[in-house]
Amino acid sequence: MKPDDFDFIGNFSTTGAVFLGAILATMGGLAATQLEWYFERKRRARHAALFFGEVLSTLGVILKIAHDTYGRGDPFGPITMRMLRSARSEIEIYERNRETLYELHDAAMRARIHTLILRVNTPLEGVFDATEEIRIAETQLKSPDLPATHREELQARLESLLQNRATAYEFVMEMAGQIKPITTDLAPLARQSFDGIDRAPF
Figure 1 (cartoon, rainbow, N blue to C red):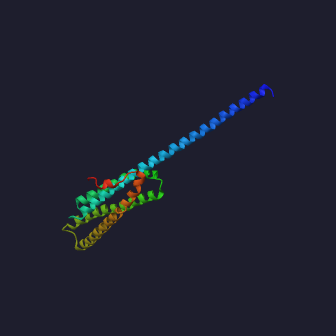
Figure 2: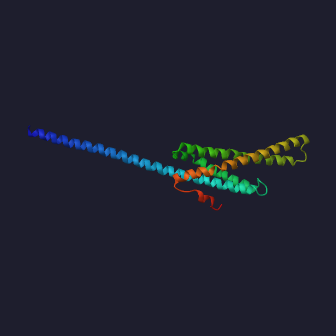
Figure 3: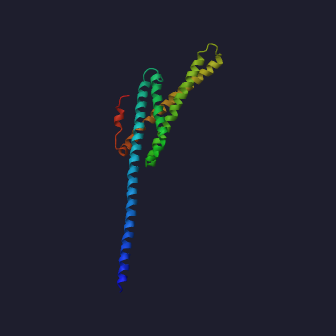
């Protein structure tokens, strides 16, 4: 063999090493990117679990306070209604951040949270709507010029509204009982217990 042939072999060896190095560098970059994406995904899932756990826990505490005031004096007095409006405000916080729900990788958990919010919010809106209609009906019944037939119809409607409001409220409280199991299941992902929120002063 001529000396030039050895130069070719040497050049080939160098080219192979460069090529192999490029492949290894590319694979390392891909692995680092995937690892970074994995940890970012875990971080975002944890933050989502923290957010929804705190929103749901606060909602549960507010509804508990509302139920305590419901059992004292006028069931739908100013304090009870104020607490129910506060509960609605927590639901609005959820609605403004609903896209964050998709950071939770468990589809069943996402469905549980969203379904629960809907099942609390719908009858809660029913309580507010019925309360407004009750106020209007009671105002109309105070009119001395109201015909007797109209008065009877209005009284029957008022009784129906009162019953509908009570039924809607009972359903809200029934759904509130499902909050605790969800926050308990969110706690491992959030790496934090939400039990302390129950003891927070409101």
